[in-house]
Length: 277
Ligand code: GLY
Ligand code: MN
Ligand code: MN
Image 1 (cartoon, rainbow, N blue to C red):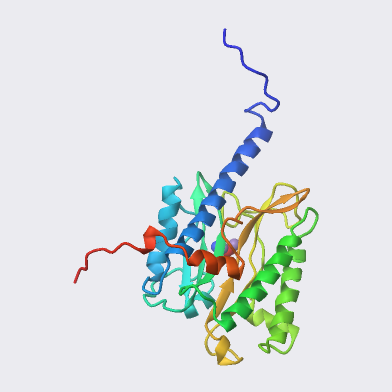
Image 2 (cartoon, protein in one colour):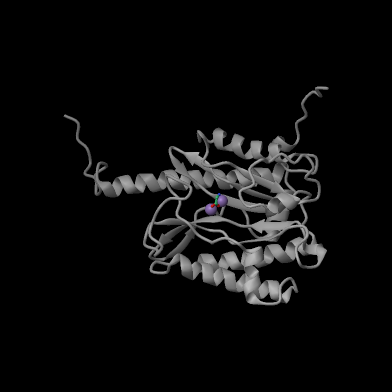
């Protein structure tokens, strides 16, 4: 007779199945974060938006994910200011910021991770100012991702930082105008769907996004030096009784960390194919 050690949680219990489902979602998020890292290493001025999309989606498959969880958004320059831009067909991304909102679907569970990086590896002064503002708004949003808080609390915290920042940069004159450049909410649930249904009040084991952004399209009512800068930073946050846990933290968010990783090489940015005329 085979003797088995007793299990504290039987495998067939719903608690165990919840743990297993969370592991699948965590893996989808980790895969997506590592794909962002690989793109940071591989990207260069001669690439196209489609190639960048291809690297993300290749890494997903390399890790065994079947496909992306939603249409990949890879927008450079002015395209970074277009919400839900999915054509990804700009062939000249040289010296632009590129916004990459992409997520692997792993065994049915979908991540949702955005990084915005300078194609040439170095943020310009204006890009840096806007990026840092979004970063601070995201940090505050993540800090507010606590059991008992609601999406409204997270939204308000991020909005306050962005509106004050845009005023101090001289891009807007009053708080209400911030909506022109930050026109969407900050959080939603993820799980089986990229926009999973769920309660707006947070409880333990939910996984939500925190994704503030600033988008300043060409022709905006501000100094043209800000035009065509679109930045979103999006992370997937596990809500716990001990505070928020960033599941996508493998993909760097701080400017110094992004610039450092972009100095590294990836074979995916190196190889050359025969020319076809
Ligand atoms: N990728 C869609 C969203 O961020 O909500
Ligand atoms: Mn999202
Ligand atoms: Mn997204």
